[in-house]
Length: 177
Image 1 (tube, helix red, strand yellow):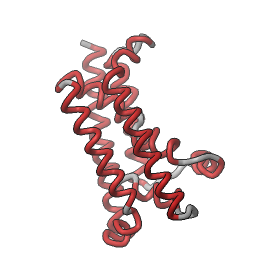
Image 2 (tube, one colour; image 1 turned 30 degrees about the vertical axis):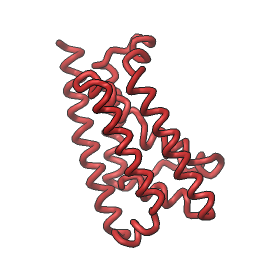
Image 3 (cartoon, helix red, strand yellow; image 1 turned 45 degrees about the vertical axis):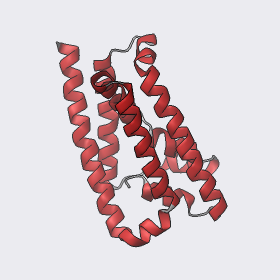
Image 4 (tube, one colour; image 1 turned 90 degrees about the vertical axis):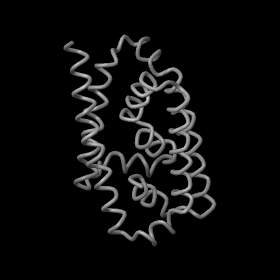
């Protein structure tokens, strides 16, 4: 739901057929990236010599900034300019908005705690729910209303920000300990 306003904003000038194609592209890119980081996330970090603690702090900081932007309703003009020039489904929706540093950090941590199966299943289920919401974006928007979407977005921003603080706290603990 937190990404719904961005999707509606970016897709408003598209035909229904183009919107459907964009929704499918967001889903496919999301599944590919999510699956990649479930199975190879820690190896990618190791290849670049990045500790899990360092990645948690970096991901936490980025997630914190994203959360604050959502809470305050801030947009970055350069991102909007980029969207006008290029296809928006893969960038900025699928990545970094949906599968970004926060998600990648969370996936790597959760795989370490719970294993591949539960994390993969939960992530794919979440992406399916996202696909359903995006596929029915206008209906959801009409049902919830502009104010409802804004409230849900802000709530998601608060959750992102709180989660970011936890990532930073845990990451600093790993770096210091």
